[in-house]
Image 1 (cartoon, rainbow, N blue to C red):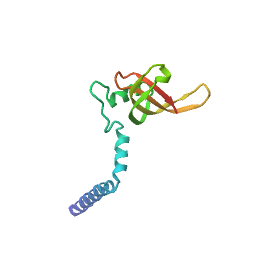
Image 2: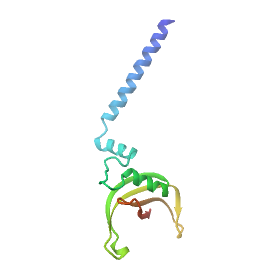
Image 3: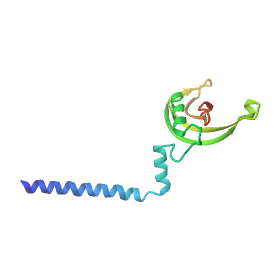
Image 4: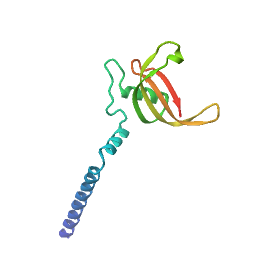
Length: 133
């Protein structure tokens, strides 16, 4: 009876070792670009930083998710010029946050939009831009 338990234990240990080895081996063969994409998908703010006195990527993400609940698919930093809209020179450093919406938005023309790109001012955290896609 004791031999039977030892055999079962040995099989479990060997099976675990093979499973762990397979996980390490399969991740080792992933190209660095694919691994970076997986990490970026898990944390879209990875590698993005803010200057002193500016809001962070995480803060911009939270501001956008309060207004547009959903799943963040991309975040980037961009300087946008609103001179034509405002009528005076107005450059803004923005966090551009792309969100796949939990609840699609129906526009007046009847089209339904499921993605929004939102620009958050890096200085004061106010929403400066949004575009439905």
